[in-house]
Length: 327
Image 1 (tube, one colour):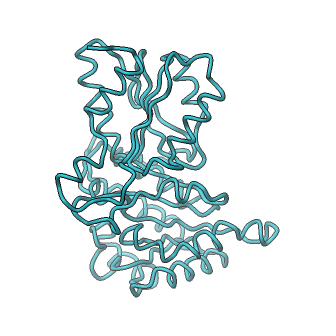
Image 2 (cartoon, rainbow, N blue to C red; image 1 turned 30 degrees about the vertical axis):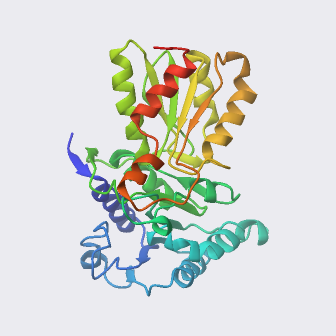
């Protein structure tokens, strides 16, 4: 099977959906003439023209609102934010308009829109450009929230998001755009709301999502050398959450470690911990351990960046703790 970059997988998803459905269009900062800030939309202006690949001013609230209005009137906008940190300015349109319109209109208006762009830290970009927004938007009823971790999932989930009749928050990562992975030539969609067991295991369940799941893979490789079999589950969809897959896994392994890039308070791992203990308490042989970013604004200094994020070594220690391995 061919290998393509994460950015190419996203581009293929958008190209295929725009060829299939003339109501789909892309708008955002630098998506047209510049081919996208991270070259996700490279070549799309040439194929689809300026009426369907639209450069916007640097005014996130304004063009997010235009997108919501277009969606209410029968179009299917893809709104790209250069980074979700900038999209804080658009939160009013995402939360107060897109998420609530179906209910407030008594079911008269769907808002089939995808908001997408870079999420989380990307190195030395400092505190205001390094935030992870999974739990922020997952808190809001009416939104669907997706965080793919590889090119295959990115393409299949973005195509599903574009066809969905609800507003979708699609969280990517600047650090993943160049990642390569196997993606089939033919069309495929992945179901929204279904987690994926990336690696089967018997001794402990490790749950993660987004780019930080790479640390889980590294940890599992090292643990395997010590005879510890880790099952890795990629949530993929943050709202709705596939609790059933997590519960079935913990019934088998009896232990769980959750790894995420967000801050600890009101995080996704907080929700998962509550639901697993509620539905599978009798199957747990140890308390669940959560690994998150430090409870501070994200630092600029490289030494502090290293200290702020969980790594494979932290995952290994957590796994051994829930397995009561002392050495």
